[in-house]
Structures are given as C-alpha cells and as structure tokens.
Amino acid sequence: MAIFSVYVVNKAGGLIYQLDHYAPRADTEKTFSFPLDLVLRPHDERVVVAFGQRDGIRGIKFVVLADPRQAGIDSLLRKIYEIYSDFALKNPFYSLEMPIRCELFDQNLKLALEVAEKAGPFGPGS
Image 1 (cartoon, rainbow, N blue to C red):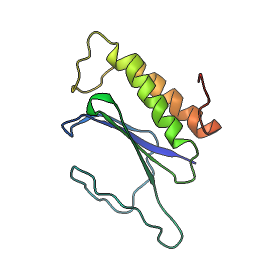
Image 2 (cartoon, rainbow, N blue to C red):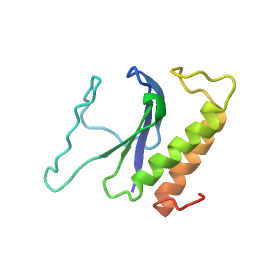
Image 3 (tube, one colour):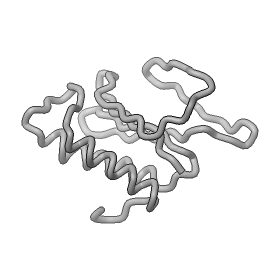
C-alpha cells in the first residue's frame, strides 16, 4: 500500500504545503483547478488513488492521495492535523495562510506517513 501525496490548502484555496511521498511514474498528466471536482470511478476493476480530505479549523484543508487499499486514512488525517497544530501553529515564526516551512513539521509528517504505511491505522496516543 502507498500514500502518494499530502497537501495542505489554506482557506483562500492556496497551496501552502505539498509533500510527494511516493511518486510513481505517471502515464498521463492532468491539471486541476480549485475547487477540485474529483470523482474517481473504477475502470477495469482498478482505481488509481483514494481521495481523503479533512477540514481543519480556520478553513485549512488537509488532503491525502493514497492507494485505495490503504487502511486508516481518517486516522492519518487526524494525525496530520495534530502535527500541523504542534509544529506549525506553535512555531512563533509561522503565520497563518503562509507556506509551511518548518523542518520539524516535515520530519514528523514523514514519520507519520511511514508508520501509516507499515502499521495501518493510528491508535490513541500515537
């Protein structure tokens, strides 16, 4: 199973963080405009990605693109929100609506993605 990408979008619709965790070679390329009008349907009994989104406070959106067989996407989204709260919002040099450039945020997000891919859903206190 794989988690492909993580995106954080501010309330104005601007991309403030992007992490390409696993980037397979794409056969086709498609561009999207905001708001995303994304509907995935199985084709030949195969769906390429699952689309998960969590609305945070203040209109921040957390988006994860993952393999549809990946378990615990909702738990992962909650964990990403927790990491955002702990390492971006509590950073005195970070202001809302600005791009997230915090090394601790990057490190903890990558660690959470690795844990999610290996173990599946997050439990309480993880």
